[in-house]
Amino acid sequence: MTSTDSAPTPALVWFRDDLRVRDNPALRAALAHGPTLALYVLDEESPGIRPLGGAARWWLHHALEDLRASLGRLGVPLVLRRGPAGAVVPDVAAKARAGYVAWNRRYGGPERRADTAVKSLLRRAGREAESFQASLLHEPWDVVTQQGTGYKVFTPFWKELSGRDHRHPLPIPRPQREAPETVPAGDDLDAWALLPRDPDWSGPLAEAWTPGEEAGLALLRDFVGPDTADTAVALYPDERDLPDRAGTSRLSPYLRWGHVSPFQVWHAVADRRRAAPEGSAVFASELGWREFAWHTLYHHADLASENLRREFDAYPWWLPHTPRGGAHDAGRGGAHDAGRGGAHGAPPAVVLGDREANRLLDAWRRGRTGFPMVDAGQRELWATGWMHNRVRMVSASLLVKNLGIHWRLGERWFWDTLVDADPASNPFNWQWVAGSGADAAPFFRVFNPRTQQKKFDPHGAYARAWIPELGTDEYPDECVDLGESRAEALEAYRSLSEAQGRGQGRRRA
Ligand SMILES: Cc1cc2nc3c(=O)[nH]c(=O)nc-3n(C[C@H](O)[C@H](O)[C@H](O)COP(=O)(O)OP(=O)(O)OC[C@H]3O[C@@H](n4cnc5c(N)ncnc54)[C@H](O)[C@@H]3O)c2cc1C
Image (tube, rainbow, N blue to C red):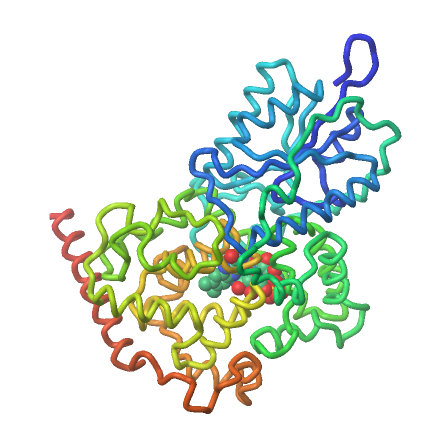
């Protein structure tokens, strides 16, 4: 948009979960409009927005430093502001006299509501506002069944999506010649206190990760490697389930924060189809699960708080009676979403005593269940903010099926401790493991952590790497009888299905 005196008006690009300068359509559009200024808003106040967990806050701090440096090389200043987006974005746009504001779309319910409100406020103030697709290969409203609904089953979803063309990544923009004249004052990043203090537990996270765009692209390059048959992507089908190997890409936090885009990943892997046909196809389908989770969130905004299959509302999982029950006490100290948990509706029937449940939950969180694969995973998570996918499944299954604890408590722990904690993938996968979700694992599929260890960590290398006291008296006994607890879970599920059947029978009668 240009002003009447023909000088281009300034443009504002609002960064969110797209902290990169390459393949960023909103940034390119802003730069094409005029002297560009960038904005990041730490919004913990808009209705329904879920505050970040502790590990995610650590990541965000470093990610914003990285973004500021990359934007600086393009001559684009970055303004940081804290507050509700509906107040902050129009205010910064007005102060910068921006005629054009651009951003890349988000897909969670509260985020979409906030974005719609911002768009109409900007337009009412006479500013042009435009949004772009950058975080998903295809828009959720474009990939629907013949009935116009979102897919509930992965295979037809992926068949439809993978058969489509996905645009090629956009190059890095040229540095702008002219910076905007007015750059409104912003917050000091340190004043946001995203980094942990007292205690500072972030040392091992910093050893494990370098947040930012260059680091994400380097991981992607390493993973796809040259066009030969001995690369990580070629070995992916054989190695991806072995937690002691570097068999997966570890791109999840970089995709979560948008340091790399799904288009960059898709095309980098597609370019290896010749040398690694199976690996590139299996890996691409994992990217497909990410899309499926986001599409599911788009259609079910309450994915983190409600069972997708509502019959599971009657399953007797344990939940604390108060929203801030014992589940929070040992957290990272990030901003927990205390409004969820037991606060929503009446808690289901309690089969575990509260004290016993809290003891088991605590043992699970601290990696002291007595099942080495689970304990190694929980300790890896606590130390590095990441856990291998196979171990996530085994650990989640133990919590919800053998320990009888609600998936929402596990989801909340992961939300607080994962650097890739994602509003779609996290609740989606918890519900998948619990059996209550989209295309979920059948409830009777209860992972046996001992068998899983024999299969995927046969020499115990992963377990030993994270549990120094393994094999000594200091390592706890198994906290639950696997056979008995499995039978109890299946019995509870059988009663649920029978009650459901009776209910349906009555409705039909
Ligand atoms: C209980 C549970 C909770 C999870 N929570 C999250 C989460 O908060 N954020 C998150 O990104 N992933 C989550 N996952 C999915 C998966 O565990 C991680 O994406 C994966 O371990 C990341 O490692 P990677 O990047 O090396 O994966 P790779 O095997 O290299 O896969 C490549 C990419 O595909 C995507 N992907 C792979 N598996 C899945 C999956 N099952 N669902 C969605 N996307 C997938 C990720 O973006 C990943 O980076 C969860 C899984 C479980 C079982």
